[in-house]
Amino acid sequence: MANAWHLAHRKELAEYKRKRRAAGFRTQRDPQYHVKYHLKKKYNMTVEEHAALLIKQEGRCAICRGVLEQTNVDHNHKTGKVRGILCPSCNMALGLFQDSSAVLNAAKEYLDGE
Image (cartoon, rainbow, N blue to C red; front, side, top):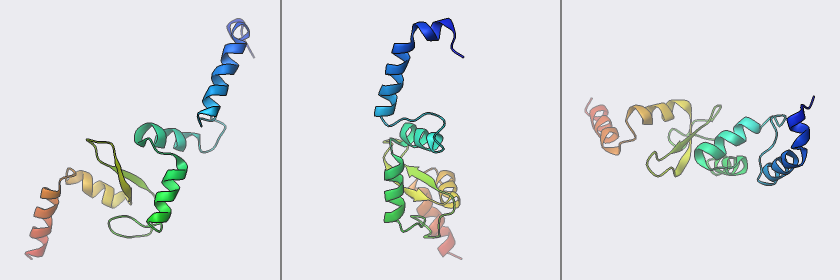
């Protein structure tokens, strides 16, 4: 049901929706709406770019090479640049190592010293 304001601004609302559709945004009726919105807003990435990266990685985690059942987009927190797609475990591990290669190397040396 349209209220008086919606009726009075019908043309502006239609133009707004047309521009959003042209920019690649869809209504919430689109089952991929939230995925598209999240990828675009957080990583400036389209669903097609995400799929291409998955194909490039052969559907496997960029670190452990395990088959991806769930995906996490890994990115540089300073630059925002996407590095790859990881499994939840590898993504969490990088976070726990503070995205620091020095800390990760220290952990490697620790493990190698066993």
